[in-house]
Amino acid sequence: MKTTVMLVAGLLSVLGSSAFAQTNAVDQVKSDNSAIRHDTREIKLDQRDIHHDNRAIASEQRDIVHDRNVAALEKRDARHDQRVEDKLIAKGDLADAQKLDKARRHELNEAKIAARDAHHDRNVIAIERKDRAHDKAALADERAERRAEVAQRDRDAAHIR
Image 1 (cartoon, rainbow, N blue to C red):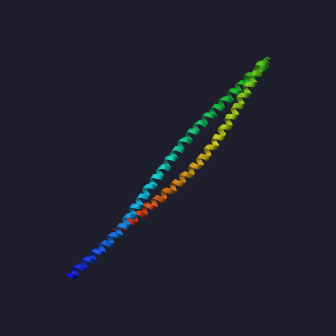
Image 2: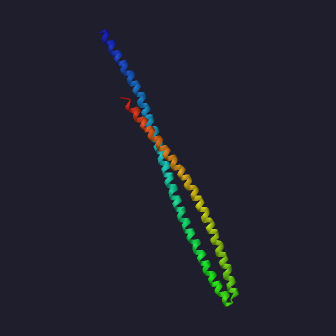
Image 3: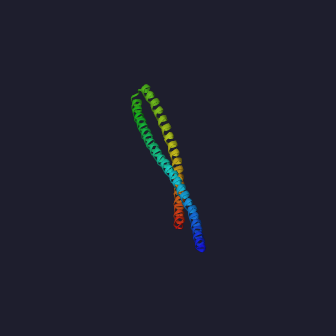
């Protein structure tokens, strides 16, 4: 009887230590799961920021196209005014021609300013695209790290049995 009690006590001791060891591994897997969930949340936030950047860049590009069209229309109007001015000069109406010349020069100056602003906006968008590309690369790296963590967690969990 004494031997049986000792064997049962030894068996319970072994089972207790293996259960304790499994508890640590289970805790480690739970910790890994928590870290992976946190990483997943951060990745989703980064994706949302990138999508927001995409929308902002698209909106700015539409604005630039609109500004370019407006500048082209202003240049077209200035060329039309130049032709009208030339006709007035040919007729000898210098006062009206001078008024048109002043208005045309003002329109051309505004068109140049609009073109310069559009060029500046294109440069800003190029910088934003570059930043977005870096963000996408960082996001891809984070995803790869998360996949590696998940794979390691799965391997560790497989060894618990």
